[in-house]
Image 1 (cartoon, rainbow, N blue to C red):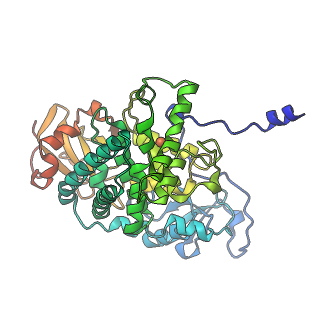
Image 2 (cartoon, helix red, strand yellow):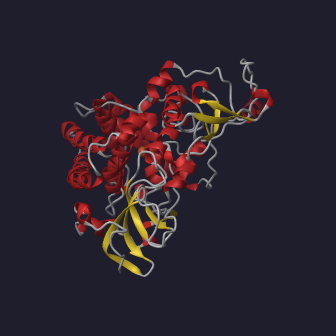
Image 3 (cartoon, helix red, strand yellow):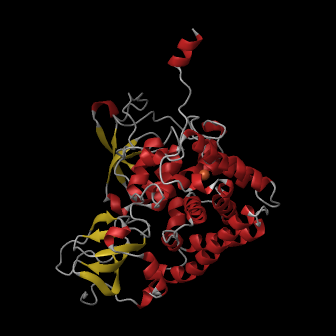
Amino acid sequence: MQQRRRLKNPPPRPLETTEYETLPPPTIRLRRKPRVIQDKRPTLSYKTSRKVAIPVAELRLGMYVAELDRPWEETPFLFQGFTIETEHDIAVIREYCEQVTVDIESSVDFQIRPTARTSKRTGTSHTTAVSKRSENIERALSRAQRTHADSSRLIRSIMDDVRLGKSVDTPAARAAVTECVDSVIANPDAMTLLSRIREKDEYTSQHSLSVSILTVALGRQLGMQREELIDLGICGLLHDVGKVLTPDEVLTKPGRLTVEEMEIMKEHTTHGRNILMSSSGAPLKALDVAYAHHERFNGSGYPRGLVEAQITHYSRLVAITDTFDAITTDRVYNNARTNMDAFRVLSKGRKTHWDPTLVIRFVEAIGIYPAGTAVELSNEMIGIVIETHPTQKLRPKVLLTHTPNGPLKPPMVLDMSTRLTDERGSKLEIRRVLPPAVAGINLHSLRDAGLLDNLASLPEFGRAIPSH
Ligand SMILES: [Fe+2]
């Protein structure tokens, strides 16, 4: 009898570290399953029509917004069609639209309200924060390069110290993260772009810095204050510090880990907690994140198999950015996949693995074409996104590096939010995302050539005839 019960209710399947990299690419579907609406508002004949155009003043939580009264790409909403989950969503729609179309059959109970905890956790001012950039990308990149280089050296030094049995230099970590946070606040694209430049054989330290930057960018999107962002950045920077105690043959094995090796790999979470416990000044939140960033909502994570309610806010944030960075980076056993691949994995695992609201906020924070993305345009030119646009997500600023005939010398800057057509008058759009290796774009070379320091001196596309 006991055996039958076990079979009917098997325990959650353990989640392997690399599992998210082997999931088949799912389709992003952020719509909730249609449910019967308990219409308590007889003045609006919701039941007689599938789609209803309503003024934004009538918007309610749970409604499925199918259409806006302006192009989606002119708004901060990443997906065409979404369920209103917070009051903040309503506030943003009111900021951009006067009237929207609601799909009644796809809407959920209009009466649902976010809990106080949810509202506090998800923040309320992401659009405002995103639109406030105190530095343009040209100036921000110049400054961010020093910050990024210093932080890279610091995290390497922290890892080396721990390897030698020393404790974590938390004051130095805090100072470096503070610089990163100030840079991300001023212009998140600069640090996001630089985090794509990876040095070979330094995966853990580079990953740690990248996760710190991505998590701060997400926190900024959520409207978190500077001091919170610094704590959050430290949590991201130190989340994998326990890996210094993981044997190299496990850490860099070019293939699937055995069950025994996986158990050894999982121990990095406990190692990380212990290392930080013995390091004076390490924030308690950093201990928690180091210990819990592989926990998953359905209890399938490790090391404790925590479930949703037991996983803290900071650990939820780092769990998302950690996964995203791992998928989009070259590993010894896997090539980097695109941002959209990573978004699909996160979308598929929202609710079961990751906080669903935070997954959406993260996608909003990073965008379809984040800084550092190699893209091919409709006029066949190739370049790299250097700055996103707060509202026109499909029209970023691009550093053009190649024509179909070869490298563009010098590279040119194209602001797609203001330049809508190509040299022939045809609509200029991003055709597709390319892996940097395929595109022939080498971020290291661009940086080493000093181009990232001198964006302002480069010609603008359209003001000169491209040559190669
Ligand atoms: Fe980890």
